[in-house]
Structure formats: structure tokens, C-alpha cells
Length: 378
Ligand SMILES: Cc1ncc(COP(=O)(O)O)c(C=O)c1O
Image (tube, rainbow, N blue to C red; front, side, top):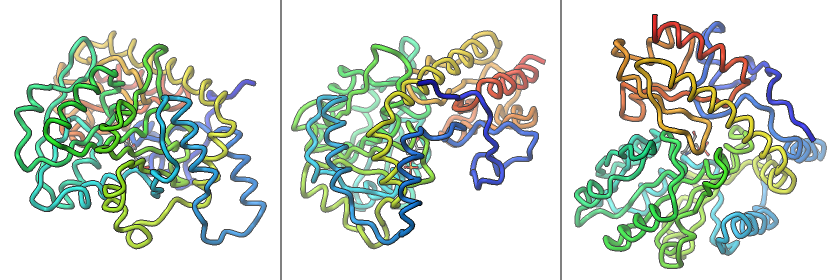
């Protein structure tokens, strides 16, 4: 079966956050959704619900708990009991719940940066004290600075935030890297909050995703794993995510707001997830091949453009581009003025960087790169 990722789909006028923000002449490659229609299996599952026609309050589908547990076992050899799963409307609320409920007000968190901005916001709004610990580039990958992590831990440190695969760096952390991180968490008795939303967007063969909680039972007992199929199958607007939390006390604390300030997924989120998990494999494989082609195009463009640099993107559809070699002090503005809207690096704490979302039709991506080349090397 073949799938079409090349034909553009008009998204303006569809309430798309990405496409509504800028004037029509700008190519928007910022917020992290893709311009691809969701898999036929997802559309079919949603269509069935629409045709049923009654959209009352939903009970959490037992079939989905079973499907998630089965998928974790099959993909990662990770045993998850269905009742370890706590459903959420999105991963972002999970970051906020972790900051508010897994730490006391006088406790402290570690935040490896650059990082998706909602991690930081969760700590700032709670508010909870935190220390940003810069990742370092080693052999072309953004990885933990283990010495800096050790130097940043305090007596009152309680939470370690992890984003794996990493947004914006594109790293898939290896088993050995995660084992050392888990040992560090054990040594200092930290709770790990692992956002693994990008775990099925793997672009290189032979580089598997390892859920940190799958390393060992004692790691699982100190870990909250946040996940959602909404990135890999492109339905973030449908709202469906969850936390996997083995430890019952941790789970109770995390879910203190359940059915109060935090509600469950939407009916369509449940249906979409079940559809994707049941019959979305071929589409996902085709999408990953397409995204890897787009990634290669971006990497070739960056390599050929003086003043730009980037690490190899192992996972996600996001390129973290170092523009510090350009004369322009504000690369986001430089490219926006040239007609390409990227995410400003400042959002992730690195103003000389931009993040480019390459989850779009290849022709449009090529057009955006041409515009960027014109102003990068005028
Ligand atoms: C690392 C990470 N976590 C969470 C989210 C958003 O999750 P949700 O839409 O489920 O709240 C994103 C979206 O870009 C992300 O990159």
C-alpha cells in the first residue's frame, strides 16, 4: 500500500495554530505537528465514531489500556500493567502535574537544556526551584553533561526531567546513557519524569528507543513516563495522552487533580489511538521513510551553508540549527523576514539557534530552504 505525503493539503482556515499565525506568504515551519493527513486507520476509527452520532461522556476504554500494555511489551520488552496507566488530555498537563504534585514547594528539579519550553514553564508556574543543566555536543549528538548534573544536584533535589527522544536536539539516548542517568537518579533518590512523546519518530535504523522505566524494576518504581501517539500519527488536536506510573503512591499523587482541573482524553483521541495502534503500522513506516528524506535534505542544506551547523537528527521531525556563525544577531527574525517562520531558539534558552519543523511536503521544505539560503549567504 502506498501513501501520499507529497500532495499539499490546505490547512489555512482549519484552525491550525501553525498556519494561522503568519501572513499567507510565510512558510510556517514552527510548532510541532505535521502537514500530513493522519493514517487511514485513524480516519476510519474517527469516522465510525462520527457515524455513531452520540458523543456523551466517555469511560476509559479497557481495550486501550490493554493495547498500550501490549505495544510497550512488543516494541520495548517493557512490562506495563494496564492499571499503571493514567490517562491525560495531553503530555503538557502531565509536565505540570509532575512539577506540582511530585515535588514539595521547597524542593528542586534538574532540567537538561535546551528543552521543549513547557518543561520550564511547568516549574516556573508551580513554582518550583530548578537548575538548568546544559546538554553537550559529543560526537555530533546532544548528550547529558554528567559532571554538570552531579554538580547541580542539591540535598532538596527531587525531580529529574528527561525528554527522550530529545526535543529540540533530536537525540535518541542509548541504553548505556540511560543506565548512567538512572544510576544518578537512584544515588540521589530522584523521581524521573520522562517525556517520551517522540518515541515512535525514529529516523535511523539500528537506533532503538529505550523507555527509561524499562531498564529495571527499581527504575520503573521511581519513574513517570509521559507518552502519546499524537506526534507519530499526527493527531495532537484530538487530545489523548497518558502517564505510566508503576508506584501506586506516586500515581495517586500525580493524579490528585483527576476529574477536577485535569480531565481525560477526548472521545476522538481514544478512537484515533486505538485505530493507529490497531492498523497504523504501514503508514507509520512510510511516514518515517519520508521524514528521513526530509531530514537528509535539511542536513545537506545546513552542511552547505556557511554559518549554520546542526547535529544529526536521530528522531523527531525537528532540526535544531546553530546559527551563531551568521552575522545576524537574531536568526529567527532573519528567516522570518525572508518568509520562513521557525521556532526561535530563545524559546529553548538558546537565542542563536532556530528549530525547524521538517514535517511537511518536500517541495514546500525545499522552497523554505531556498529562502533561508538567500539570506544566510547573501
Ligand atoms: C517533548 C514534547 N512534549 C510534549 C509536547 C506536547 O504534548 P501534548 O500536545 O500532548 O500536550 C510536545 C509537542 O511539541 C513535545 O515536543
